[in-house]
Length: 390
Picture 1 (cartoon, rainbow, N blue to C red):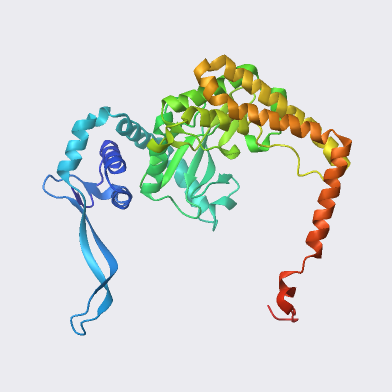
Picture 2 (picture 1 turned 180 degrees about the vertical axis):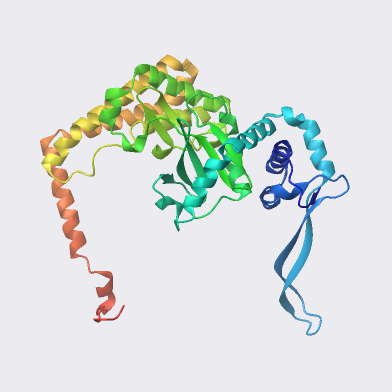
């Protein structure tokens, strides 16, 4: 393999990306995928990278050690290793290769729409300021993309396109959910344009749905399907991200999961019980109003807590319908503990004497905080604000 100005087709890109993702160390993997548009196969040539590192080396003139820039050519991938990988995996029949090739080929249909959106994004210092922005994650942001009557989410960087390796990271982690109902489905990817496109998940994020609203609309069948999805995650080695922003609810479609990951070996123990516990916390994600401060606040919180208790009880029943006795024994203790805490909280908020005690304790705590010296007054120092000085 060598680097040259020869663009490979979608299958070759898919093979190279899969090989890099599964066989190379991170730095080598990222470099190969970032340059995937200019990688071509030649039996006699490996892919190499010239690196520069600052190292401590002997100074021949003084005999002392000194820092110096050392240039070194590193081999990223050998043709023999690449060929062996394809042979062992079955080439284009290997699912990660097949899925990548399909997503790369699909991008041809999205490219004109993406180009128009990217042109609009150039006028925004941050992509999050675009009117079609749907939110941001740790390393990317989502922009609404419409094609026909279908809505999609285009992931890109915060202020520019994703690197090819960043785009493939999303593909690699979400391949296990391919074709599964209630899991985010990728539609297209481009390593060169630096975008990942997926179908927009129906409904709203659970962080925006109160337990009262959810308990009113969710059906027992949808709770059963949620348990089934959590079991599927175990069977397909999917690790869900237990954030309410990454879990959706729709009155018609039920629950949906986005931005999940591949399960790591060290996460296998207790995988199902961990996900069942995630589910019981996610349905309560929006929670009660902010910390109560007055008797009326405590009274207003009671309907929210009552809805949380009802949701948890219904979730327990769904678990009993969908899990085996052995699975219930493993998974239910954390769910039952959460329900018991909610019942205790409801009883306390509904007890006038305990409410009065809590309010008095909170008032006393605030008075103590107000009486503490401010940082600028400690140790005899007093800060002086000078007019006109920033």
